[in-house]
Image (cartoon, one colour):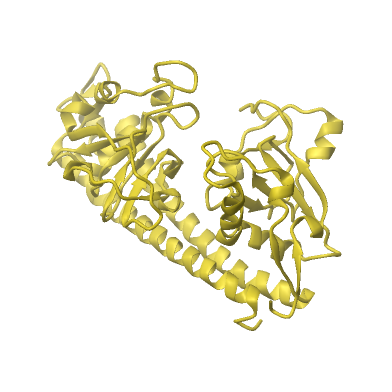
Length: 400
């Protein structure tokens, strides 16, 4: 074991604590309030984390510090974890457990990267079994056993893994810049209506001359939900779920393997726009498929909107992303069972510009989104390489 002794996560911690029970607020009062949904994505985006109101005494007990590790203890994301890398004013929510590593016993950066890894997720899954509503207590989460080599080796392993993390983060930032450039142009031309030639174009009731308002159903050649999958970790098929759609981006690392057959129309295609259509919290989120994905579909909680021939795929994708805040409020049904129907999505009205302007936007946006997808695939490969490397570093198979 890389010359080290075996220990457990709990044994190297100076404290282990369940999170704080409170409601998140959007107004900037109090500390940031870290939740399960914030730690699931590959990178922790503090700008998207809400706030909460908390008394000073509680604030001290539930605060987060650099080197802390927070782990999801319930739901489909049980075992997901994040090492706190940034000094921020934040506390953590009740469905998280905070492990505070004692720096005298272990290097927090080393332990944190082990707990963030697939190795740890697999350990947690083996402990909770196939429960429909999985839960893991702090003792279960803290029972993770790993090698504790010399302090120098711990730091070296953390540095190696950190190099992968830095590459992934740099790619993520480049992706965000590429996507934001295209989105800002969309808003400039088609929301603010400052498109080329707007000075000489008559606008009546918000519609420039030569443009039309059309329903999504008129612009789509396919509009339907996905399948009820048969999950099978050994299967070749892939199914996208609601967790895969976040911040306008498709994250395939959260998709699952499945073996159920489906019609060719439900096979995901380049340009498909995916809309979360069930439940609270993720309802109305939108992401677009920006490259072909083999043997892949969506589950019944996601709606596929496939642009018809001649309709700019990036234009309609951006149009639906602009609708995301409104889509999130359009659900019908009981609490936690709200549904966004095919008809509601199909009835959404968007402006359709003249063909020449539409093509100008597509010519600009396509390379940006294509490069962003390439960077996303690079990150997937970097994550896979990092996860393969970690056990070999821990075992001593690769010297550090």
